[in-house]
Image (cartoon, rainbow, N blue to C red; front, top):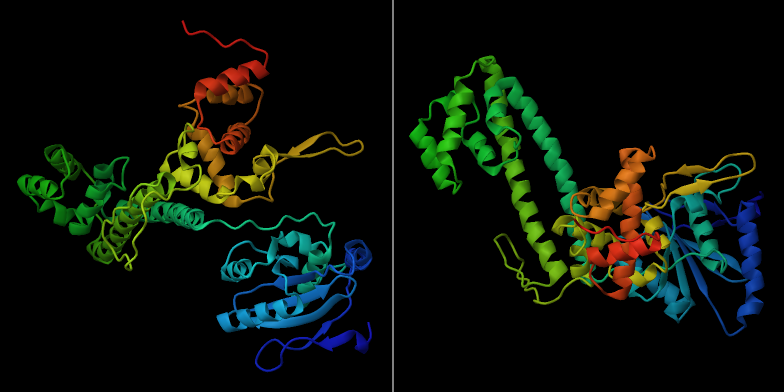
Length: 476
């Protein structure tokens, strides 16, 4: 590669700057460039399309612009701020006045940059980063400018078979954001509970006995917040503890006071005084965090129910920022999700938020199953026997929620338990059987969403028996 093959493409100064290669470096990119050049005659002289490839980052983005027949014509660096992104949009509009003829390839489907490009009317095509890495050439050298060029050539390739992004509506986007935050809060809550249990076993083992199987109960956490040591809790009389339970509006105060007295009376290890003093503030901090997480998760659950069913929101405290929600605005198909066995408010919100309010983007049930990671990957080549592998390229949030849905449906659906048990009898593991059952549930969900009908167990069981050429079993 000679010096003429390099041009100054990035802005100098305090930024990245420097020289970036102008030619493509892989055979696939050469084929894409030739294909784009041959597409000019097919599209006609009156049709002009602009390809945009973006290698995004937190502070700045590298953007490659190209035209059919010309390849990449410009690579620019854009800061991650509103003026710089607006200038990029104006530059793209100056090159192509019709936003529908602008195809943007980027390695993400979320974020403020993607929202701004969608609002401008451009066709945004999110791609898997592995698709870019496979086209980097034999050396597989990572270079941001080169990744932007490869993405631009993908945008110019009519035969790449990439699907444009269909953005979520406001209700679906809010539901997805709340559901993801709630799922993250579950992991934080479990981590804090494990830490609290370890601290209590060290300095206050009687508290673990008092908590029993529900260490995250609000009454128990408030008790620890007020009396974080065995000495402090032992100084409280039974009547005072019962009166405190009544003030907390929790029932069975006498039974709780008896359990506390029995746990304190049992023989327990005594921790050193200096260790107890050191852990007091740690225990109070953990209980305060757990109480805040529990209150926020309950508020999120109410909001998710409102978004799914369109009920009138009720503000339960906190800063509402002066926002007034309009009643009756519900997620499209929210009542359909809640009609399925095993889908409560939280789990239905997670699945509905990830699928979105445009079910038409999944042309077949298999498209939805692959997006959720439930459809297996099969390989058979030459003398190799059939290999069934777990799908890795999928929506990880949806892939985590579907097996939980399948597990929750076992006690509420007869055919689900029968299907699961049949898989186990054939030697499948517990997780493999749940993935197979989740794959079936997604197929049923796709048909219900496309037809706009709620799930009915008897109708689906009859259809399933008919498909299996088996008469339905009659109840005795």
